[in-house]
Amino acid sequence: MEIGIVVGTVTATRKDESLVGAKMLVTQPIGIDEQPVQSQPIITVDTVGAGVGEKVIFVKGSIASRACDNYSAPVDAAIVGIIDILECDYGKG
Image (tube, rainbow, N blue to C red; front, top):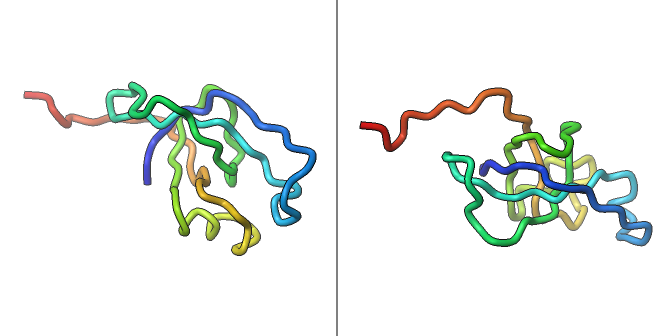
């Protein structure tokens, strides 16, 4: 699992049938310090009702499609949680 922040939405009127009804969001992967960890955001399928500006937990790869209603959907990244609080002592003292 990784953390990210939702920075936008995607609307695609033409897409694979298994993605009809799926909410797609643009997610910027971030580190524990909440700074971007790669230059390009990714498109994620939202499974939990996240919105722009929220910090989220997402998964990538073949496991991502398991988070969706249709396991055979061509999903490479899926949001599986919304972060309420992120606390970490990593790297301190």
